[in-house]
Image (tube, helix red, strand yellow):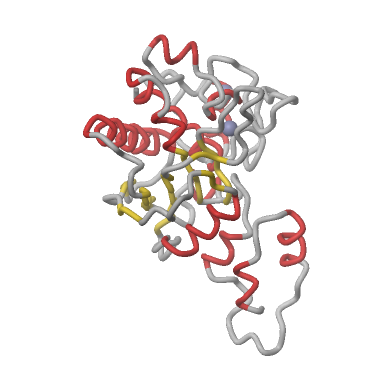
Length: 276
Ligand SMILES: [Zn+2]
Ligand SMILES: [Zn+2]
């Protein structure tokens, strides 16, 4: 496989092309692509079982990169650390990982000059440049990139902004300019919610990597839960969080989502108090 293909932007067409491309005789590597390559052509939910069960991977590590300027105040840094703590608690609660779940100390990456709007191609390029770790041995690895900027998916006319998204099977991006534009009191819960929500997509929710035990998908906004109080409700990617922001608490995963996780080989967290 031509290594230059790594630079191909993330599109359905490119992915279809790559998967359809047979290994060539001048390719000495094994038929299993290197993790970085495999991840670059994967989709959220593709590694749900690797994350939920201990069949192949007994632990999870999370690599976190933060763009310079994304955490402009001490309060922002505190809220950010709390969001990572909450993520760690949810990983421990939902994933069968006897070897443990660990968020590594975050690294600061440079901010591109004069750039505040990021496309999915930009996000891919940043991951290719700065991500250090992919799954290895018995450790599954997730990657969070917190950008100092906003997404080009924002729609000013409609008044909507995307706070974050999961874009590959182990990769998530959060747009801190959008978080930091909210009132200070609202930022911590927004940051926690979007971080855990995107992680939920990597667990295969909803009906996007693990099967539903009870129909609870939202056909208008796949792959999301139809319960407006659930962590996996579509607006919890940050388009609107009014109810939660008022309460100051992040939403729980509802029983339908927790049942899917348990049935797929994750932990059964139904009835347990969820982190907040
Ligand atoms: Zn979502
Ligand atoms: Zn749900």
